[in-house]
Length: 126
Image (cartoon, rainbow, N blue to C red):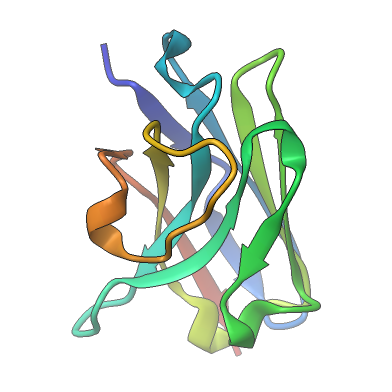
C-alpha cells in the first residue's frame, strides 16, 4: 500500500488555480509534519510548503508565498495545496512528503522527509 497518494494535478492557464490533495495511509502520519516539494525537468527538487501537526505552523518557499496555501485535515489524513495565480514557472511534478519524526518543527531539507508520494504533474501554459 502506497502511504502517500497525490491527486489534483493538471493543465491550467497562467493565472489559474489548482488544488492538490495528498491522502496518507496509516497512523504514522497522524502527528507528522507534512508538505510538498516540486521538481521541474532539468532542475533540482525544491521545497514548496510544509505544515505542522494540528496546523499550528506553515512555511512556504519565497516564490509561492501569497499564492499557495497549505492545509490539512488530520481526521481524514489529507493535506491540500491550494495554488492560485499559477505561472509557467510553477510547472513541475509536485510530491507529497511526510516527516513522522517531527510534529511541530519544520525542516525544509529533503533528507528530513522519510516518506514521498509518486507525484502529480502540474503544467501551466502561458
